[in-house]
Length: 196
Image (cartoon, rainbow, N blue to C red; front, side, top):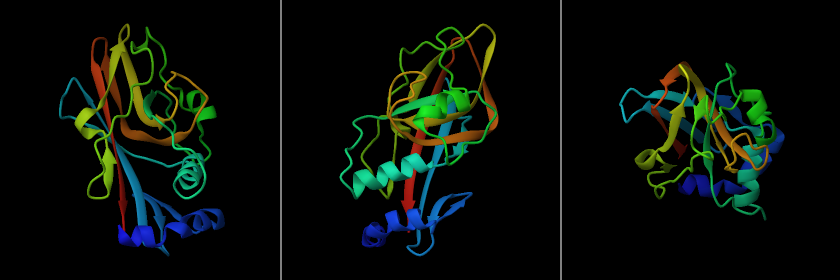
């Protein structure tokens, strides 16, 4: 963590200059020797047959983090998890404004989930350079006529289903879609890591 803090002022410049690499494991800052990565975990009815999806941090997310952490930006008070059904891989140009339409966010209360809003992302305190909600995953109460395909998940700062406001922090597409059925509880955990 000392190495991360030592080079904290360089991250904004590295992003602006394109001195970073999008790798299969996350966002790598080679000069600083820091890797930012995240993984989504999805399971049904408390089962241990989890899907995993490595996240992408879109440009909007990275700029927001830098402005809040190192600039004069205001910290977002809450974060929320969303599901999507689009057969599409997240891209750097995704934002909260285009996420719902681009990813086909699942928003229906009759062919989706009955929660009134996106479930909250409630984290435990950071430890060992990680933070997440693995101990208290977000629960989506599935409602559908037959079945529903979940292609991936995302983390956003606005609670409204299909909202175009706020910031898209990250998104991940699962290697295989998860098929859920009426009455299932689909749980999503998200773990973020910084390593040097």
